[in-house]
Length: 312
Image (cartoon, rainbow, N blue to C red):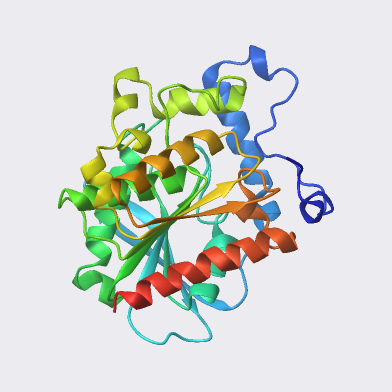
């Protein structure tokens, strides 16, 4: 497995989570503060802000814990009917915000031809599991009610996200099978961590392990299917909405994702898989400067638009 040449040839990207030399000796809170500071300083590496081709609207969505910020992207080219997408950003449940996901959410709106509502959920360690899922669940309920129409979103909807946001999206789909969340017409899960039991992907990664412990301080919840979808019961998997699982070939989460796909398909879930050959975890952040990443994103985002239109 080799990194795709187009990705290699892209301008150098400094990993915003790359720790300084004294990182191992820092306290957990100092490590988190460092990661957030570096991520915030490098917002521009995620694409130009504001992104072109969309009109944006800043809103507040009420939740059981208060409210969260959200940003609605309306394609300037217009839409051809009702429907929208809820986008949940990545960042290990610790990093990420509306600006770091600006380019991806705008690209999704333009490509799918639908309004996109990008959510800024509460983050760990201040707000560990299940805060992010609860915020997204409450946001979906609000957006699918009368208040959604007031901000220009109506009709069938999709849930979509990358990394941690993809995990939240899969949790929303499971909640929908229980009748605890409005049912999405389609779901896009881009390189989610679907197995938090073994910690294989984070074991040799200081940042990854820190994020794991921040989001899931209680080991007992790691077997909850909302945390580890690979453990969901067959009847739950069978009742998932049409779902596209986007797997990055060079991602440490790949083995777990492939196991999840195998279990879901065996249960009869309407799940499709798109493997992004030569791509690392987080490649959707780089569509603005990697032609290969953008082609893959366009294919995935077009599928989201198609899935919503099929449900009209």
